[in-house]
Image (cartoon, rainbow, N blue to C red):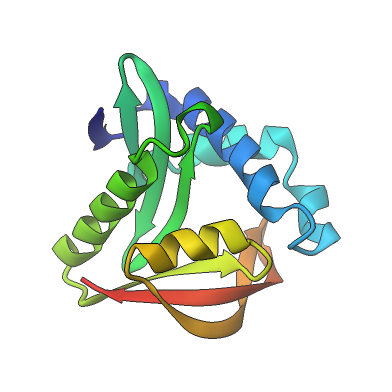
Length: 156
């Protein structure tokens, strides 16, 4: 496995992983208003716009997962379904923590949809602490939709 900054050619693979993973972790746990806006096409648009924030894990010639970091926030961590359980998510999370620290921050944070128990267990196993519930403002166009989440934190 190689971990590297994403390039424009990775956008399709990132979008496909993001779309499938978002469906797995969010359907039934986020407002229907957000589900209606998070169309398949929206993930391809957003992935292309977010390449500069994205780090990918590559196995062979295949993008197997990615993480997005902005400032002290770990915004997205997703692994392709065929690579789950292989350690890629932990490697990407460690890279995200390194990037947050390299950016001059002492603590990283991320939001997890309250009902996404699998993700919450993963972060807790990796040393993150549940800082409690809050409404995450999911960006939609020029506005946002509040999503019930838990804020996880970790010193870096």
